Image (tube, rainbow, N blue to C red):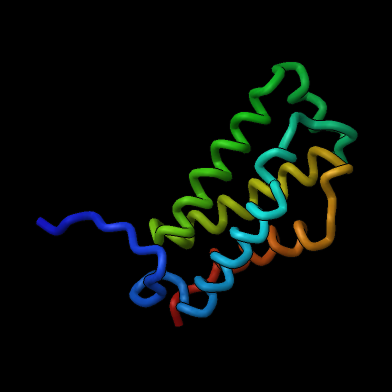
Length: 124
C-alpha cells in the first residue's frame, strides 16, 4: 500500500499539462494574495437579479462559496484531482463575481476564466 504524500512542487504525472498546472497554481496564489476569500459575501447588487434569492437564507451562499474555494485551492496547490479542482475554483470565483458587482475586477475575472478553461484541458 502506497502512502498518500502531498507534493506541491510536482508538476509531472497529473491530468493537466505541467505548464498549465503551474499557471493554475500561480492563479490560485494570485487570488489568495488578492484576499478573494475575505471578499466573498452574500449577493450584493448582483449582475443577475435572480441571485437575490440567496439573500433569503443569510450566509449559506457565503459559507458554501468560501468552503468550495478553500477546498479547491488546496486541491490545486497539492495536486489532488487538479482538473476538477481548477474547474470548481474558477466557477466559485465566477459565481462570487456574478453575485456582487463591487467584486468585479478584470484580473480576478481573467483568473477565474483561465482556471475554468484549464480544468477543461487534458495532459496532451
